Amino acid sequence: MTETFPIFIQLGFLLAFATLVSLLMRALKQPLIIGYIITGLLVGPFVFNLIQSEGVFQLFSQIGVSFLLFSVGLNLNPNVLKQFGKVALITGVGQVVFTSAVGFLICVLLGFSYITSFYVSIALAFSSTIIILKLISDKGDLEDLYAKISIGFLLVQDVIAIALLLAIPILFANTGSWADLGDVVFKILMAGVFVFAVARSILPKINDYISRPQELLFLFANAWGIGITALFLYMGFSIEAGALVAGIALSTLPFRHDINARLTPLRDFFIVLFFILLGSEMAFGSIGDIILPAAILSLLVLVGNPLIMMIIMGLLGYKRKTGLLTGLTVAQISEFSLILVALGVSLGQIDREVLSMVTLVGLVTIFGSSYLILYSDKIYSVIGKYLKIFERKHVLEKGIRNKDYDYFLFGGNRVGFDFIELFKGMKKDFLVIDHDPEIIGQMKMEKVDHEYGDASDIDFLESLKLDEASLIVSTIPDLETNLLIAEAAKRHASGPIFLTVTHSISNALALYEAGVDYVILPHFLGGKYASEIAKRFLKDAKEIRQMRKEHVKNLLARSALGHEHPVLERFR
Picture 1 (cartoon, rainbow, N blue to C red):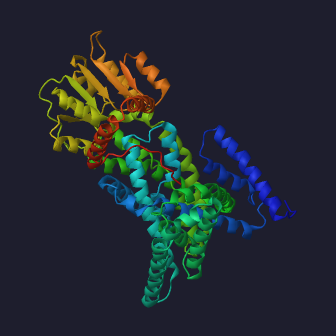
Picture 2 (cartoon, rainbow, N blue to C red):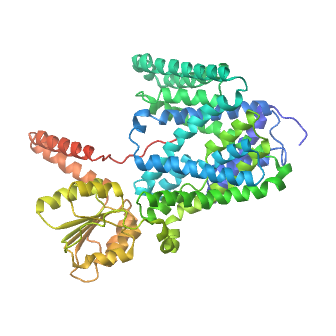
Picture 3 (cartoon, one colour):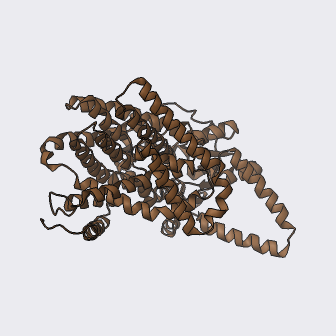
């Protein structure tokens, strides 16, 4: 295409292409980020050459990165970060360290320079929070153990990525003396202190004033985010650093959720342009040079990352299924990876061909990991028996099963808590079974009979002799697992009473078909119970005080155990 179009027409063409390709991606059930990068390939110089005003689209791209990192900062509430446990910290840091080390070695063996190997190896270590959470949510697994661990280590990785985005421009862009480097560090500390001081001392006082008209809040959020980013840029720091600091500074304020919700459409629009521009700048003139290293590095991410995570999870005492499901979530690189490498290109540290190679790795791994995550349960059913090497033998006390039990409880966390209290009051022999080492530790402290085991393990279920029990309760919402428990328990017409939990009507009907006596759908049951409470309150207002007192006592007991009511968080 030789004719030059006005910027508005170029943008129209670009968005039309992006929409068509994204519709195709949705039909193929692929992440839309792949569609955006493919759009960039189509509108770039190698096909239709629709991006002719590159400077303008570079600006759009920078705005997109700024909004994305501002949003990330908003969601990285320092008060929440304190709650991350040992598992999230060890898995998050451990996976980054080991993947970076292996990736660096491979890159050096492939002939890359040390500085290029550094950038690429770090890029391979980060997984995409956006893609992982979307796929886990689509599966309905957000409340599963592996999902909680994944969310924890993803947030730890985000913190590491933020630190790198702040540090790299200082470490590599500064070519002066140590005194110059110290001056840069001093400036960024002073800028950060100033921003946080304003956010903590002034903004809370004008919170009501700026948050009432939603248009004013939207305008303030844009002014704050872009203004702080511009301030950092003026002082010689990167756009990425300024946007992150601007977001984190607002992360503890009460209106941060409103800001995030208002900025999300704007952020998504501009970040689409970032990925499109990224695809358009892929250097295919040297495709022969990058295809082999891209394939090798993709293999490291798709196979090596899950193996590294499974080893770490096994060492921490988790079962092989939890290790595999958690490991498969890290089989792709992150949008942070692309931003990090793009930062290296802008600093003149690495060639643009390296960015093309990492982008190609991103396309391959995002595509592949989508299937690995969505079909992880089926993958485990095929290869699970070969993964015993990833379990530590006798890492946890096997329990104190030295007698026959009347009642079995699968899952001792939030829903299981009330059943444990019930069984204690009934003075019945009961056994709690869980595959979360933290829950097992709690049971041990409370001197509750417990067993560390995986309810999806047929041999383990056989050893329990469930068909001889009086009552079985499963708080595990997984359909396949509950069907296995039902099969083991309902071998005789006079088998035990079996109650279980699920989150969908279709699964509930399937469980009833399998012989389950009662299926708990928490939201439906909660609504019915709440309506009964309202009826009782209307008949006897005095009962409100007693129920309120009991509820507060129950909540405090749960809080002491680290329970939290499930909530669908708004992640970036």
